[in-house]
Every structure is written in C-alpha cells, then in structure tokens.
Length: 182
Image (tube, rainbow, N blue to C red):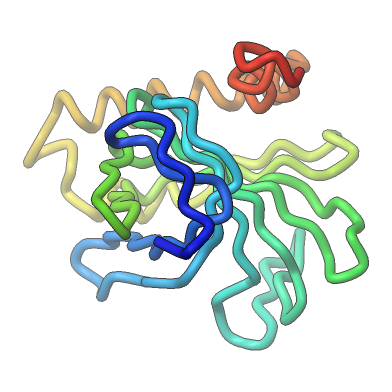
C-alpha cells in the first residue's frame, strides 16, 4: 500500500492506497490493472481506475476510451460488481455490471472471478441491457458448478430489477450511509 496507509481494521483497505484489480476470466488470460482505493467498509470495496483497455472499445451502446474513469464497487458477499463509467470530462456514461463470484481481498490485490454475464445501465437509465448470455452458456459453468451458475443468474436478475425499479442509487450508497456519509 502507499505511504498514506490508514489502518482502520484488519483486512480493511485504506483509502488512497494503491491496489491491483485482477479479473479472472477463465479460460482467457486474467486482466490486471492498477486502481486507487476510495473506500472499504468491510463488505464493499470501492476503487477508482482509468480505462485499462485498448484505446477505444465500442460496444455499440457505449464507447470506452482513453481518459474514461471507472469507479468500481466490489462486494465480498455478493455475486456482482458495479462499475460507474465517466468520460474524461466527468460526464456519466452509465454503469457496467459484471456478474462475478464474491470478491476476494488479498493484501495488494482484489481478485474478481468473472462469470461471463454482464448488465449495462445507461446514464439516463432508459437502456438496461443483459449482455454475454451466450458466453455464459458456452462457459460450461452450469455443468461444472450448477449452484454457482444459479447464483450468477440470480445476481443478474437482481441487478436488472434494481436498475429497472430505481434501486441502483441505494445499492451504491448504502455503505456510505452506514458510515454517516450518505
């Protein structure tokens, strides 16, 4: 961690500390990128990182490009991660949600196992798109680990419901409210 390390409790990441996010993407190679810890309440870890991919990735419904900033929310007890995406100028593009196993926090690394299901929520919330369901089926998770596949599908359903029913703001601020900052 950085010299600004503030220890609040064992296993809690200090705000301002540097960490590596490791996205485990079986069978593809893992993706690793640096991020800065924004908050850690013992359940949810929030980090901020610049777009770590190629210069531009155009999905058709959103473009990720150099200068974009991701504020990423990971939970130790939930089967998803939510990434707020903003342009270099600060304009909200939307939220990219990965269905994952619960995040494992190691001393200098967040380990996030991607389960090949995603959800996109546009900034104006008019578009809520389920993504990569074909990749999920091809992954074979349902055959290898039926319980995990069921949890993944349930997590996608939960996130979609929150997005459509206006619960996204509560999801992303509930930890801040517990800390008295919400």
